[in-house]
Length: 208
Image 1 (cartoon, rainbow, N blue to C red):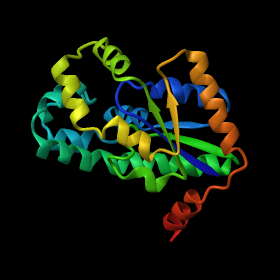
Image 2: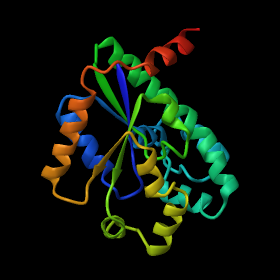
Image 3: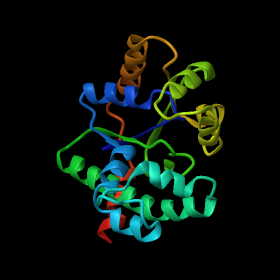
Image 4: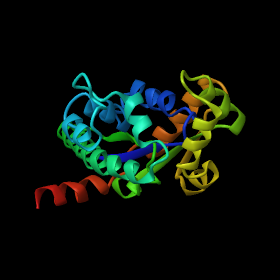
C-alpha cells in the first residue's frame, strides 16, 4: 500500500485537492478532521485539564482555546504535545483499516507535514500550492480572519517555496478546478502500481 502525504500552506487548496483524490477512489485521512473529532471526544479531558475553561460544554471551544495559546509558544507546544500523538494514532488506525481492505494507495492530508517531520510516515509527498495573491484572498475571505492572524499563521509554516522544492509532486491550484483535477489524475497515474514501503515499516513497529 502506497502512502501519499498531501500538504500545503494555509489557503492553498488542500481540501479541494483531497476531494479529487477521494472522488477517484483513493481513501483520504484528514488530520484536521481527526483534530475536530478529538476536540469533541478523546482529547477533551486532557485539554481541559491543561487549559481550564476551554471546554465549557464537554467539547473544546476552538475560539477559547485559540485565545488561550495565542502569543504563548509554550502553551502552544503543550497543546501540540497532547494532540500530535493522538493524531498519529488516528492515522495509524486509518492505515491499518485500509490495508485490511486491500487499498492500493491512500492519502494522509497533513497540513504541517514538513513542520512536524511527518514526511517519514509517507512514501511520497504532494504539495498543494497557489500564487501568494490567491492564497491571501482565500484566507482573508474566511470568517474571523484578519491580516494579523493570517501573518501569524504564515510565520508558523514553512515557506511555500521550500515546500515546493522538497515535494515529489506539486499541484498548482491557481487555475481552474478542471486544471486541478487533471493534475491529480496525472499524479495518480504516475503512482499507480508503485510499491510503498512505509506502511510495512510502521506496521512492524506497531506489532513489535
